[in-house]
Amino acid sequence: MATRVLPPTLLPLLLLLLLLPLSARATAAAGEEFPRDGRVIDLDESNFEAALGAIDFLFVDFYAPWCGHCKRLAPELDEAAPVLAGLSEPIVVAKVNADKYRKLGSKYGVDGFPTLMLFIHGVPIEHTGSRKADQLVRNLKKFVAPDVSILESDTAIKNFVENAGTSFPMFLGFGVNESLIAEYGRKYKKRAWFAVAKDFSEDIMVAYDFDKVPALVAIHPKYREQSLFYGPFEGNFLEDFVRQSLLPLVVPINTETLKMLNDDERKVVLIILEDDSDENSTQLVQVLKSAANANRDLVFGYVGIKQWDEFVETFDVSKSSQLPKLLVWDRNEEYELVDGSERLEEE
Image (cartoon, rainbow, N blue to C red; front, top):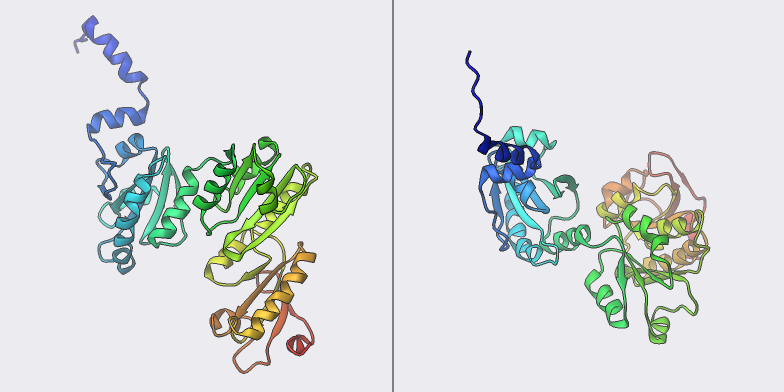
């Protein structure tokens, strides 16, 4: 067989192609421009890898045309896409017919529809939170935000709090070295906002109820709760405060908060009520808050039979049971009833 020698003029081009990263070569090969104007783009096996190489933050809906949940999700993605495209770090929304392109779906572990994934520089993270447009935006904004934001003025602090919204707790450090909380900003990025204020006035100190620095303020806007940590900022003390403050003092038990408990090793003191929205129940929850504040090594929660009877039945409690019931639950199958808890309302 004859050997063919490449012309010398082709050697630099060949070396350049060999040195190009795989993703860049894929993009060059595809020769495809992906819109960044807020439209949901269609991807398939021919252009998916090129999209990963070209787009830093790509949110993908792996769907099936016959799937009812997928059909309900489509307008939510259409609504969220232009908002996400307008972020300072834009997120492009795309969809893949994983029923048709099964090899592509299988590559990323898609075994149900819809499956939502955020690809950050090509690395996938599955999204299992709410599929409503506003919640999608709030949840995904966290992934493109800094682990710890640096705030240089009162105005920056107010803007940060306002833009963070009410879906996640936030930790504001005042006079705190950024390096002390950077680890937790990375570790708990999916669950909370973190910021350090470098410059602030006495008005801010009054507003956030601290009188010395360094101070770390934990805020739960949704539950109108705030707690304060003055240190020590070494050892396990800081992480214990952050970890315990990720949840409100008393947790309303529902499908979303139940998922949050999976990451918490503490036992749950749970009160089961008939209706967690009536006046007597509200008063009992306030009593629980006092107990929770003094016992941060436990999680305190409440649930009403009216709100979630299927969950309550797992504790052998029904509408005919004498309520309220107080129990200590290990979040698995083990729990212990507290004797006399039925008389809590009377006492």
